[in-house]
Image 1 (cartoon, rainbow, N blue to C red):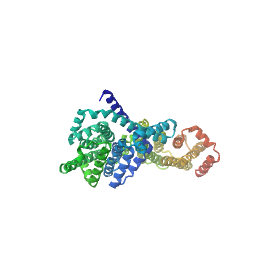
Image 2 (tube, one colour):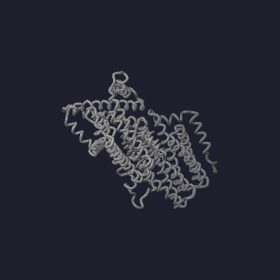
Image 3 (cartoon, rainbow, N blue to C red):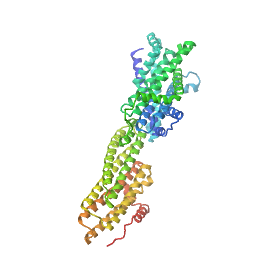
Image 4 (tube, one colour):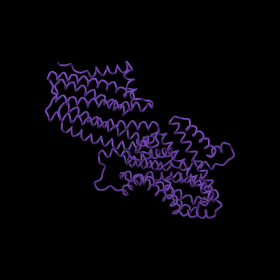
Length: 593
């Protein structure tokens, strides 16, 4: 084996790993967060959980990615440890799909069909199709499909390169002698675990073993412990991912490790006991890519079936390993909610965007609650407890903006689809609007406190008029929030007409206030307070308009804010009709002067 063979081997390995990464990313983007949403709806039925883990891992081609997701779900409190264990078992079975795909390279036959089933035959076709789609298609989903095709082709080309590079090793006696070491189960398990821990992918390490099997020097006896060790080595990814997480999230990684260690010990014990009494003839026989896929599948399938009834035992073992400190428990506070912003979810951008939307909705609810209370203490009776709650809400909203903004910036640096990229931009704008709405609630508290301290009171006429404006603002805030939460574009178009009505109400109220000043019904000092209140209410309405506009803009890349507003106002009966209906609904009481 020359230096050029070594370079070819390294290059083949690089292409293999890169292809696997590209294909996995394409599959994840094509799924668009749907797989993670399925996880969230997972029942506590262990068989369903196992089947789900199998299916998802077979799709994304990585048990490590599945387990890391589970660590994030449990850490965020959206999945229980008990449910996660079943998924882990299924993930171990699902990861064997890659080995079976790679084993197709070992197909032999002279028929056209058999030859076309070999990856070396059909992967160039997939590569051409994929490159053509990437070059000429502008559709995101088609580009994701193209990434999967190209990734698979690169993966298979890397596999063939590795197989060709190691082929000369079959004539090197020293290589055969080294492989004999791995007949020792302990050395074989350690070698497999170390290789997989380094590249952090059991699918990739099994692929490397399948490539080496092309030398004809690897036997079943030496391959078996290596394959089992590879399943242990893949646990490193989840263990690293669990650093700094909650105790339950750490337990997910520990269960993954225990599952594979216990499975390895049981499998090797049973296998070598039977071999000692019966004497398996295939132990010293040469193993190929297909044989490695068979061993990999039998191990994971049998281990899952044997340990499935003992999920509670594995759970208890995890609790014994990762113990709760005395008096420790889950605290019901705002920090618990921010666990949804788990950095592990950044590996699944579509899902991470949805979690950001969820938290943004919660942020909006807090801001809305503050506005409701602020209206109450400004117009009706001042309440110190409500004023303090508004201040607490303001601190919470500021924290939401900080945490969400930081997370969204990290998310924006990922390889996002056009849709997700636009969603991130929308949420960034919306959290700014919710934060400003909360600020206006605090400004209204200042208005209420000034009224309280100076013993100022609105006239009955002014009070009735402000209540109308408050109702309109409350309505526009409800519509904007519901439109954002449900992603309802039709509802979003109803915001601008109502915002227009709020603007008109403010103008009318200011004019009426001037009349009251002229007749001596109101003082200049009271006028400043009144004006401040109207300004803050009108600004809340403006931010609702911003939210609606951002939502519509998210679905139209060529959208221009000023053009949209102008178009609405010039749309004739549609816009004017809505303005008329809202004007009638929020008609001001008759003047008393």
